[in-house]
Amino acid sequence: MHVLVLSEYWSPTYGVPQRRWHWLTGILEAAGHTVSVVTPRTKDGPVQVAHETLVPTQLQEQKSGLTERALAQLMSSQAMARTAIRYIRGLGGSSRPSVIIGTVPTLPTAKAAEIVSKATGIPYVIDLRDAWPDLLKYTARWNEETGKQSVRERLLGGLPTTVASTLFKFNFSRTLANATGIITTTTSLEAALRQDLYQQFFSTVRNVFTPPTHPQAHHTHTPGAPLHVLYAGTIGRAQKLSQVLDAVSLLPAGTVELRFVGTGAALDYLRERVDASPALRAAVSFYPRTVNGRLTRHYEWADVGLVHLADWEPLRRTVPSKMYELMEEQIPVVSVVEGEAQHLIENLDAGWVSAPGDVAGLADLLKQLAAGPIAAPGTAARDWVLHEREVTAPENFLWVVESAAGIRTAAAA
Image 1 (cartoon, one colour):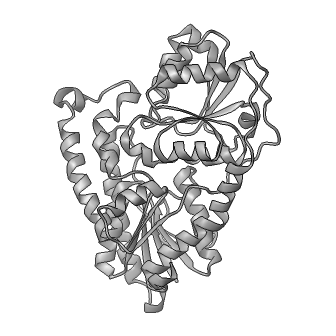
Image 2 (tube, one colour):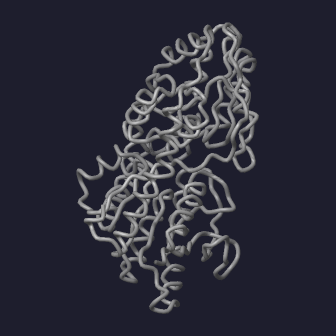
Image 3 (spheres, one colour):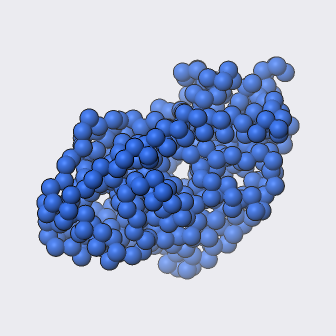
């Protein structure tokens, strides 16, 4: 079977979407399928990379503002749709893809998959990595963590964004409804979507791809010494990491050492806050995102890993991929999460949970952990992640893709 993937992100650039699809492509190829990918690139014409064929589209300039970024993504998705249609029409009958997969992020890529499907008659599947479209309800809060508003927001009170997000949510929901299959990354998001959508082919494929680094040892915390807290991941809007700084500000000097490793839209704002506070400067440090995500020295330094999300209702149906990585490496997790992520931490005994938005509660938890010894987690969380990666996820992924393509029957589920 030939699978055509539409994706805004692909190797050799690095990030969670690229790591997810490097892993999923391997699953497809191990099952005997071929993969072609329509993705933005600087070169023209199909290029063979590893085992998949890359079909490049026009590369759009990356923007930092939400509006500018959304427009660039829309233009990129339109270019992807045109390129994919030309590519399919240039193939012989036996070489045509059996199924199209549109990967989200970015959101317009889903629409591109629908357009290509309608133009070619090939069914499409949406790989939905976050709790869309419900996150669009929170567009008015997306810039809270950057510490600034755009000129449009100051002048118009966010009205254009609100109108645009409402229209986009309606359009995106129709795209999901027309898909032959939908892949989610959490069971709670799958269950929520099933209430409104009636596709026969739904499946959850968690972000349990192989971590790029394996530390040889972990730091042993001495009671009363500063607690080494590591946050390694996206420093963005939905993480609400300014509240971690608020919590650290409530602690006596020397209670914690907090290390941020990564980049994102909120990085500059966090740096400004730390620079403005002598107490925070003494406790907080920043490191750039590591090459290929190799975090060995940071993991070996850490007493605990931090996972943090904002108190937005749709994020209850999100599990940060970094949480799985920490669980596999048996690094205790301080998790500021709700919903499915909270249940996993508690049920697998992988760490501690503090409620999003409860700054005082997080400060108390960190103070307690700094005061005492920290026991290493057992193997339950690690074993669960490995089983998800090696058994559950490949089975779920192949089932939904092959079923959508018509080479499995519903009874095979």
